[in-house]
Image (cartoon, rainbow, N blue to C red; front, side, top):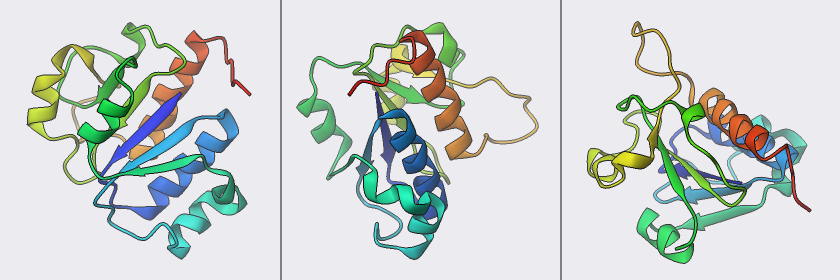
Length: 152
């Protein structure tokens, strides 16, 4: 599996997601610009001693990443869709894309990928769940669908 963070802003979220990625053999892709340095002490603190084991790739753009993996599915986590994250069938090489904490995924990207937008249902009393919590919820559903096959 692959988690993609589009222009992440908060190092603690990225560190926490990185830790989840290590423990599930999931690749972590970061799309520039980043709101912090990957050497930042906050990201390392959140990722604990796992951070050195993150299978990390950094890309200049989302388009660059998508072009590099033309045979993979890309799913876009957003609050702006009705399709639930558990209503799609994930393959082990799929990518789950999350937007920056303050704004989410840009509207033009969501519009171009309307059929692959997914959401985690919640009460409409807040904007969204925390990014690292949402990433864990969706990642574990994708892993469950693939019989928790963590690969090599």
